[in-house]
Image (cartoon, rainbow, N blue to C red; front, side, top):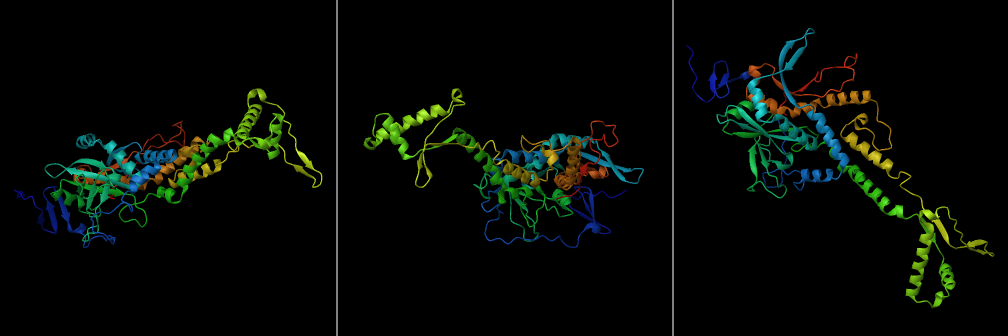
Length: 463
């Protein structure tokens, strides 16, 4: 009869194999790396153990405040959330080789996993994660173990705007703490409302085993989509709209259009009169312009302006002819200025700023890599952006391009699966995003694909 292992500590077996009683996992020397992966370390110039997000530690809030001023920007963000969320999260298991020798997976169903997903409201968790990934290229998933410390019982998404990384650990190079507070930047890591939570080292191939063996009941699994040159906080590509000033331009256009509508529509005529005009108006009323007081001159001008305004406006005056006189200088053979009335152009009718608005909208769409056929017409006067076939093809292409992002968004869930040994019971177990595949109306058409998720987005990356 085999000897029963009762120790709760790791046991070194023969052949360079370690047994972890808490997880039932064997660690072999084949995967025991001889060195740690290199992590660049930032030089710091202050004594706090917090990495500020932006120079004022307020970058996320400033991005939100600016984006909230642009309905178009918010619509594009929502569109990208829809793409990355798809039809929610599912899981699948390995089903063997098909007739062509290709590995295949099939949707899984396991009572334990189903209960875990329901208890954690996993679709809502994933929506919150995707939202932060679109806004900031960051996701913070809090993992909470059960009381026996051998199973991850709960996952919770922590909003990126409320999270700040601690400084890099000099020994390991990774940020081993996250500080959570809803009041940044009006808070500190020592604030009573700040909650410090340990961070998992996602590059550690034994991260799952170490977390289950540790005395920590919760830890943050960070996910991100990398940007070049960014070590701690990543920068989404669309944030370049702010630094490039296209966001400022797009914000100014409606302000200028509003000014035109508010002021220019009421200014239809420009009337120019010489000084002699007022002398004639006074003489016609048996007054002398030269002897009139300033108040009398002002009242006369108001009276004449009122008469002219009445004459030039109103439906009953449409079609009237206005005769004005001017003098003629016989010596210089030039016109002596008289009353001149000019009809002003309506800048609203010539589409002023429309092209600027279209260019700004085009820059917005390119920043999010959204094809034009999926956006629809940019302005009300535009023709359609393409056929239904164009939209369908571009939608499916966009989904294919987003696979790398979807895989990274699944990192925390696939980490949970390994900790809970689901792949051990169900070989090939993995989470995936249920892609929404656009199809032709006639599902029997030779180019159609009746399967909603013929190429699911899956992933086993920890990042």
